[in-house]
Length: 518
Picture: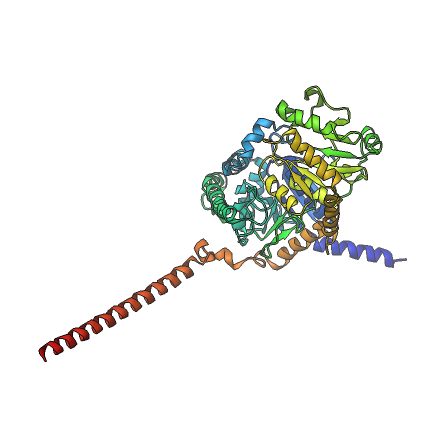
């Protein structure tokens, strides 16, 4: 009878010996960013690790091993982005990422009393084993890991933006890997590859130029001797991408894909009214949403009229429209369209009656659609959404619409294709099978590599390219050396030829002179 308690005590002791303590810093961005990070944090907490979190979204209920040690005093980016602001974001200007989502956040929050106390008097029983931070625009928080002398693990909630590659020396092959802001077809032609090169270099250089102000802020709040934020030393970079959607490309071992980590079962039931409506949709239904931020009710009447008219034509098939403020929609909503201010998206996408998903192309939504085998109509609005939708089109699982230019006929055609062409459903079901066919779950993958760098040191996955200048990585010095050698060879060859010609001319003149004298 004593054996079982001894086993349980041994297992508990083993768990405590292998558990780690993490500081997690989540800059105040949209809730969609936090959803992915929350899944990672709770996944680590479920493994027995202790998670201390600074974020804009504290837990509403206590969660084991998960502690909110501070909440950012900031506006939450939930259901508050108007169509007008979408137009600002649509420019994909690096200035927005470096300022609005970068230096502005640093200025507002580096002086947070919790952070200042954490740096001056870090916990010692137990101490932090590593820091986890979202890398997006506000890289200033990496100074905390530097001051605490602990490994820094970065998390990218999207695929990698141009300025993120250098944080981990990720190889950049611009011949076939487009940057996040490009709107291209695959494979890229000569013009697209040329544009890809120059736009990539522009985005990276401009972001790095603008982010210099973060250096001043870091030194203002933490001291004058700190390194530049552009010299962040990441031990590991977890990326919200998956091989089923991302391009096949070379990756340094320090870049680990954990796309789909946010896709997990929960016990929350569908709201009764919504469940009844979905269950009663015997002819199927289409789910339509622009995500957790954008207010569809603020779109121009011209665009909404296109939606109304086209969606009415697919009746008796129904449409579930996620709209935060249904009362602000203009009159004329079709009878087959049902509005709901909040929708548990994963449960809706898993329902057997769903036929298609109309989405803005956010990476979380795309991955959820792939996981559940739902074909899509993509209407990208800004940032990486264009690339996400283009990647879906390349895999024949989606149809794309340009929301700025689309007419009623365009949306009619898209709905007809996605609802009645069986190839889209076949392709996404095949892709869904590949998505689920992986040796470890995304949480287990993240946990394995995080524990790996803690166990073997934060340099264990470090690429030698981190110690090279950009001109060495691009082999500019080698090319210059070869060009110099070729130039020397050509100069020597030309000199020899000129000497030979000169000697031949001299001999020729001597022969002519000899003939004349004879």
